[in-house]
Image (cartoon, rainbow, N blue to C red; front, top):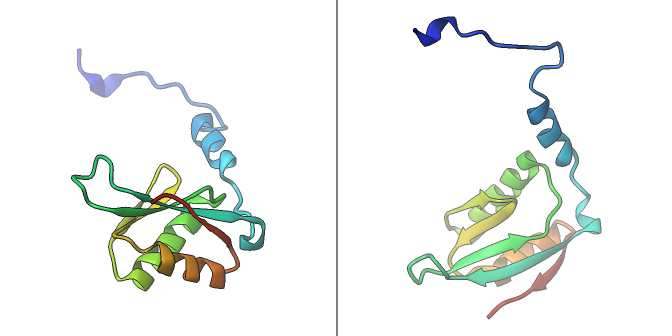
Length: 111
């Protein structure tokens, strides 16, 4: 039996799983209402240090845009993973300055 003739059920609403996921992060909070926590992590990265921004309530798009801005300001690579921004290297001080200019409250944590 070939898989080309499989029966697929559909509804007018489409895939509700995707809509539920989008609704959970539907809107970003303004920077003035948020506190960004900056951590330094090296575990599981072969001893390499990564600066991490946690606890921001942003849409996926806004998170990516903020990560891009931080990467440019720090002159370093990075990524968005599990709702956190990871920037390669020790850049917490520079990241704190950029986030404060954008209106975020900043807490620097970790050693």
